[in-house]
Length: 139
Length: 206
Image (cartoon, rainbow over all chains, first blue to last red; front, side):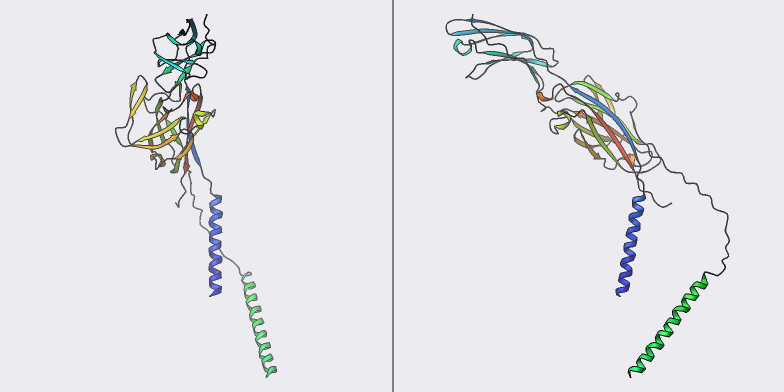
């Protein structure tokens, strides 16, 4: 009985080895077909030529911010932001046809410290902010 | 008693040895026998191997491929039709789609906000419509989405028609940029390569 079992085991092992040997000897051929496509994302151009003219009285600073419209397609408007150290930024939105807005604030908050940026808004989540202006200064 | 046993044992050994020698002599003798043979004319068998040929074609009248698009914005997508066919004579065991992209940047490494790929299959030819924003495709038969996810990856198509010789899969692929892509994705570009690979099916008995 033990001899028969041993013979069967040897035969099975031989069969497995033969199968593995045949398997590794088989070549697998493949055929390949390919195509390419390029995608370049847009850059939202910020408005250019940002200019700030400031007039002041004893307590109030009145600032007119103007710019040249952005060349970005699908522009929906502009966001004018006045950064005031120690205070919440002051934000004014304008439509795509507008190229200047007037902003008023306490002279003490902005004189020599307040700076502006104008951001292009689009119908997507992308925006194009301009660089910050130098601090406004009451004449 | 002991002497008798030894005698029997010796006799048995002598008989066994003679048996072994006799068998060996018989086997050796076999080698000296003459051998007569006859042979027929060899049967000639021609074996032609099948050709593996996976092909990508543009359906007639379809928008141009390869495609290059610029000024892509969040929410934009680009769709083109492509026919994948088994133009060879061999059956395939599988067809995989691998997409690589270079250069690698946020468009390809950000799997949620970066470029996304979808490949759809139609049982009959896609119907193309032209719109100002690009071609659109509708399937007048049965439609299936074969894969959908980040643009770079590798997928095995589920039971494509092109497994069999002459089979044709009518596909459209769409590359899109999710609306959630933020300002970091501006001004980037990449070139994606779609590679379809068909593997030969295992051979059988003939």
